Structures are given as C-alpha cells and as structure tokens.
Amino acid sequence: MTDQSTHFPKFYVTGTSPCPYIEGNTEQKIFTELSPQPLAYDKAAILEHPNQNRSREEELHLSLALVGFRRSQEIVYRPACDHCQECKSVRIPSKLFKMSNSQKRISKKNNDISSEIKPNTATQEQFKLLEKYINSRHFEGGMMGISFSEYKDMVENSPISTIIIEYRDRDENLIGVALTDKMKNALSMVYSFYDISAETKTRSLGIYMILNHINISTSTALDFVYLGYFVKGSSKMNYKMNFKPIEILTTDGWNLLK
Image 1 (tube, helix red, strand yellow):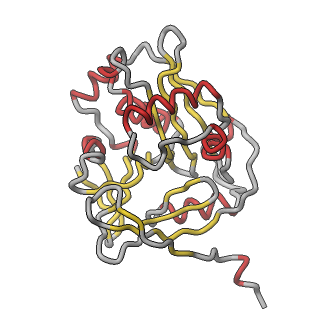
Image 2 (cartoon, rainbow, N blue to C red):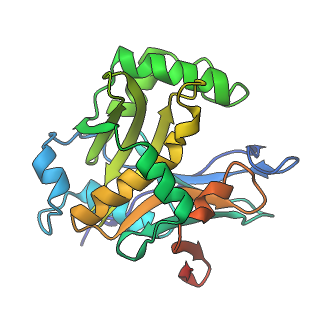
Image 3 (tube, rainbow, N blue to C red):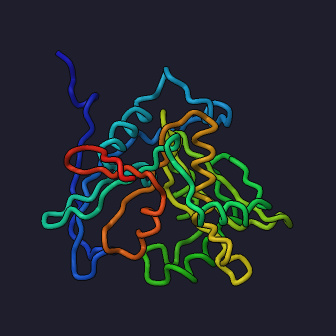
C-alpha cells in the first residue's frame, strides 16, 4: 500500500484579518508548506530552462502556481475568502507581449541601468534600500519595521530556484532589487523594491524592472512572467493591466486579455 501522505501536501486555512486591498473587507488564505531543503545555486542552470530531474519542491510549486498560489519563504498560499473572489492571479505571456509607447519611453530612459542576476543572498546594501522604500511607500504596511534578520529569511529561505536581480545606475549605485523565483517555464516576481527619491522617481523603476523580467524570460525561452494578484478597483494594482496582453486566472482557467 502506498503512503499517500508522502505524495499530497496538507493544506491549512488562516484566520481572518483586515484585507489590505479592499477597505472594510477581511481576508483568509489557504496555504501549504514546501520542503525546507535549499537548492544549490547555479546561475547557468537557473536560466537554461531544464526539462528533467525536477525536484519535488519545484514541481509542487509549479503545479500550485498554475492554480493561483504564490510563494513566501517555505510556504505557498492563495486567498480563500468566503465572500470575495477579487484577488486574481495574473501573468504576462512573454512571447506575445508588446510594449506600449509609454513603456518604450521608460525602457529608453533607463538604458543606462545595468542589471545582474545573483544568488538569493541578502546584503546590507539591499536592506538599506528596502528600508528607504518601505518608509516612503508602505508606512502602514506589514513590512514596516522589518529587521535585517527578517529580510534575510525572506530572501534566502527558499526551497526552490530563487534569484536576486540587482539594478545599478551608471555610478554603480544600487537603485533596484527583485526577488524572483525561476520555474520550469516562467519567472515569478516575489517582491521588488527600488529607489524612489526625487532623482530617480521619473525613471518609473517598478515598470522598468517588469520589462527587464520580460526580456530575461524571452531570451531564456520561458513563457510567462507572474506578477502576483490583481484586484479590480485597487489603485495599487492598476499598473499590472498596462502590460498587454496579460492572462488572468478565473474559474474558467487562464484567460488572455488583449
């Protein structure tokens, strides 16, 4: 007899908490654990789109991403609210993507930026940029007051292929960081932050970093860039709909919006 517990993950449901996107609503999440065994970092292997010998953790993560789960450290979660289904996963089909005129201008404006794919290792330089970002943009969010130890856990505590992409200006100043998961056929942007000082605000770095992920995806034969959740009516999420075409996960599966 086969021990089914070794093949199927156990799922749990959180308690309710205030919804960060729709005022007056509460949220719940369903989640499960990925194996805490870390994978060795290999930049070439991460980008060459391997097709076999995938670990259980990689395959589980991919399977759950297809039905709307997101990773946070060793767990993957999805909203599971009783009275609201407005959180919908979105992803950009890299090979179909066409830059808008605005996005072309943003790309051109940032052609002096260099990017480097690195191991998912936390540094004090990254953390200082994160603190400035949170203090300026998310002063009421759950990330407020994060310690370096907590940031280190967020970056390094991953049982799947995870990378850091650093963005630097022509003077080698760190101005952007993206924590990104590499899946079998996609990149998944877990968390990103950037310099929003007056000197760099006009660069639209958040948009540029997504465009850079699309470029990496197409140049490495990947199919999608996952952007997390879209919530209709949330001003925080509107920018995601400016990437066209985009796919949104509904009860009927992934639907392409042009």
